[in-house]
Image (cartoon, rainbow, N blue to C red; front, side, top):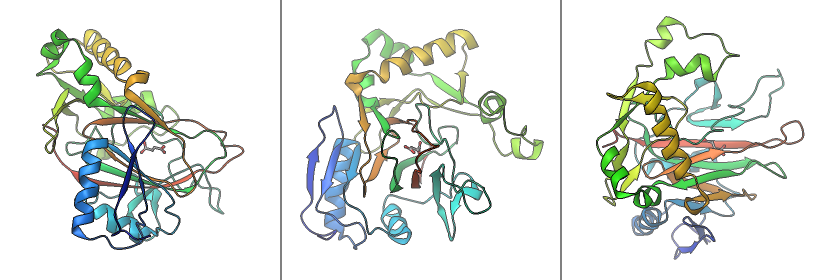
Length: 287
Ligand code: SIN
């Protein structure tokens, strides 16, 4: 098994997504194989790589870098030691009793870092330790959700822009954390992104309405704006548009933030450890 052998792409028993078999991401990958992989990713949106038990942090970085510029871990103190571009998502603690990663990351429908001006195109999540039950990751196909909207709704939202604010959302989302210091808040300007974005490769349109830091829509009163965002989000996460990934030992998953949302689910963290290594790549302004 090597990263250059003929790729086996098997669609998942789900509305979208595919498994990639017979590939070892710890091995170098030729340009032609990467091209086929990229095409499969464009087609299936979420790729599940099975049996990646030998992928090292260096391999993860090398593979991720093929998808564009690597972003640093979102929270510096939860970067993997010696690897500033790998963010750890985990409930495990070190010998001093500190979490080694973000314990409850992403337990809401979102696309990664939608609150940034240049959110990443792609995310690659490598499982390192998994709970025996729970801890699935849910994915939603935002092309399909957009395509299924009534024509009047597609026309209505065509030019809307959703406003995201880390500063305003902070006290609501993190009541247990210290308030933001003014110098930190100054680093987190509000951003707005199109509610419907066009994928630069497939040229398909996708809803872009994830995240729990959305606070409104430009030019619209807060109440109706938030009702519309919630209505669209509820619609987009219906069973016909979603896939629930039950992680297996050795799984690594690549997803496209330009046309999917995802949501981490809970597990018994008093009983189990879950350790995931995340890389985020290809920051770009959504259009
Ligand atoms: C994330 O939202 O990036 C984390 C997903 C997960 O841990 O399942």
